[in-house]
Image (cartoon, rainbow, N blue to C red; front, side):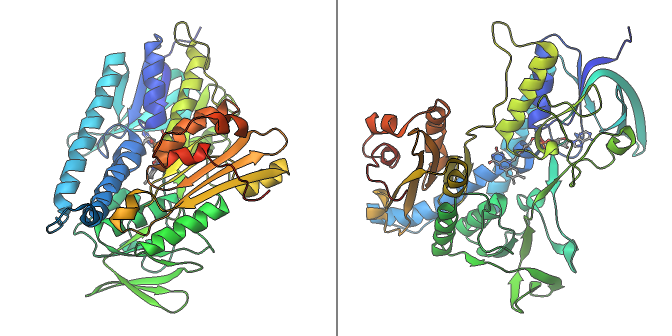
Length: 467
Ligand SMILES: Cc1cc2nc3c(=O)[nH]c(=O)nc-3n(C[C@H](O)[C@H](O)[C@H](O)COP(=O)(O)OP(=O)(O)OC[C@H]3O[C@@H](n4cnc5c(N)ncnc54)[C@H](O)[C@@H]3O)c2cc1C
């Protein structure tokens, strides 16, 4: 029988990779994890330049609004001003702490940590390129019985004149100085979140999107509603609009748009999608099947077409969310090394994955959009409630909340639940459990609300809006 250096070699120390390595080691496997630690600490996109720092900045942005709104509740005095350096420093401290937590968890589980860029050389062979203390690079060879590709994704910026002056979500957190004028290009959730965040932090934000409405793929009414709220809060949102070229001038970046207009900005953030991190990974040489964007193609057991090589998370371009990468990682580990003691093997379910968009106000959503539900189920019933939250009766804010239920008329099952409003992500998580359990509208109706909350609307919508 062939002997290998490791039972399991994980490439990438992000959400999926760390979880897979730790769980496999806890099951007694000999595990190595390769990550380029010189670039970012452990934890990948989510911890270093994604979910966590973004949410911290979103909280920061909320304060601006809260100071302003507090006057209606009797608070007086000058509103504090943002110290951008303090926010950046405190974020960095928290992220370093999390990097340390991940490192301790891996070491504590007995995972061998390898610092460098890993490349596949064979179905059981990996080369690790490391940077040595004198600046030169060295190479180490390893063998492993099974290999997991968990290399994530990276921002994609199209080619155009002036591209070298733009930044991506990787750079925005440490931008210096604070951008008084920010141009955000893109219409996906990352673009919308940064638009809202920087608008809340005090930048004058212009958002440019090629399409007719932001947040493609979300429920149509939700897309329009949140776009309207973003505009109400001061965002200059331009749809069906694109960039032709960008020039650096003494007064900042001069952006020429397709309609001939000029936008002047201190920084231009491109959030125009992400591509899988597959460059120089050795996939082509090994014949690992890839999709049009380079994504690694896997079957429902996360196996590539090359035996013993698996892939999870963003590099497979399926559902690009941290909890999904974690779920996939745990499913692979259970398959290869057996489930945790006393537990059934984990199976990753892609049904009713809840998600939030941290725009201001937030979106929380789970299940089918009205449009997809109509296509899939035919007869549906839509329940909808739109209102001004109780808080805003005194705050003076004109922000509105929208909540929506989509019901399969034949079975009465709630198949879509959507919200735009404060804490939508927090509210929708609990309802996702009910929906996975197959909750019907009758069950929602028989649930007692918590008063006074916005969430209670989901169990008190009696009159159908349309079918
Ligand atoms: C701005 C932003 C906000 C986001 N917000 C959310 C959110 O609110 N909620 C949510 O659920 N998801 C969010 N996401 C998505 C989430 O971050 C990803 O889905 C998740 O990180 C994917 O995990 P992963 O393990 O597949 O890859 P990653 O976390 O990207 O990790 C991949 C790791 O592999 C390493 N690597 C790559 N190639 C090699 C190599 N050859 N050798 C060694 N190491 C390598 C990289 O350095 C990286 O650390 C956000 C993403 C972004 C960009």
